[in-house]
Image (cartoon, rainbow, N blue to C red; front, side, top):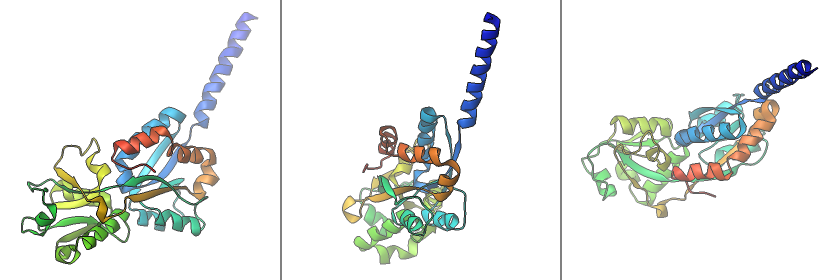
Length: 254
């Protein structure tokens, strides 16, 4: 009888373990390029807390809207603004209106030997021939950058120098590789472990733009295929653990 109980207990434990494996899910997350580095920490923390995995795809928010509208199988969307996820919600592709998970900040970054103390003068000088900016039509950080240049009355004088990247990720490549002398990017990038200490950067004055409200939504695909886990990750984005991660990467908290 004791031997039989041991076998039953062992089988029960095996079935329980298998059930745990079956229950673990993998979410496909559309991630705005500025969140790329923070996402790795979010992914690790979420896996530790829930056992579920995240697979991130990184691009400009505008590109994601087009893809999702055409049936791309993403469960959750982390946008670089509120307008793009709001559009998805209004068009019937998201389960609820977006909610702000973080506010992004802009920086000017260079890997060249350029003094950024007087960065506006530096950008207009002959020392800088090319300035990287994310495409303002698809990337909210690019859109805000153009607002900054307009507010500082630099948009006309710097127009010939501007080089537009498809997203913040491509903009970062231009800056990091030295293809351009300087460029505007997200503060989360220069604070990431991968880029920390590489080149020099300065904060763009907060008075010249509004902190960039970034919203998240659970998409219809997520509700249909991974409803519980998609909601679990959405809720996790607003937890103390996630907020600490966002803060560490230079984001302001809602």
